[in-house]
Image (cartoon, rainbow, N blue to C red):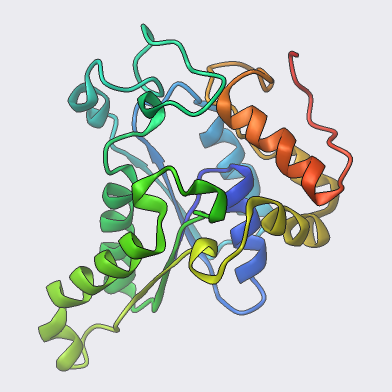
Length: 220
């Protein structure tokens, strides 16, 4: 089970896991400005030959986040460097809860999301968080697991095995070639990458560190 945004990290995570797992993907529409994510998630779901791909509409979360978050609120400018305004409150916990419910229902053993070593500023990307939520989910289904009706899950991320964003990029590029430039990283509601936001800047840096010529089209 793969949380699949259509971004560089989730696509590369899928490419890394694909040889070993039959992948199911779930993409979340939570009211984010970056609506290109959904389109690219559908595109890469076909390329990675996901067994099933669901788009989960949870746009009501935008109202809950109200004026606190730059990724969902049109009145807040998206920063060029890390700022806590781009940390969506327990976003990964929400995503992982829904993905894990699906995983338990179909007997999947792994629930993966694309957090990596460069995400250390995001609390719900850290290995400590993924280990604890994994324990909580398995505890919540412990009776079904003991009865053999459910399978124990592992909440996995590249961060848990020490992969950086550039590590992921190298693996994804090896498997997908130039398709990797079609992944979507930008936080803005634009048709091409803005080239200014924190996520675009991280994308540029990852290509540079990986030694891969970045063919992504940016506004700047």
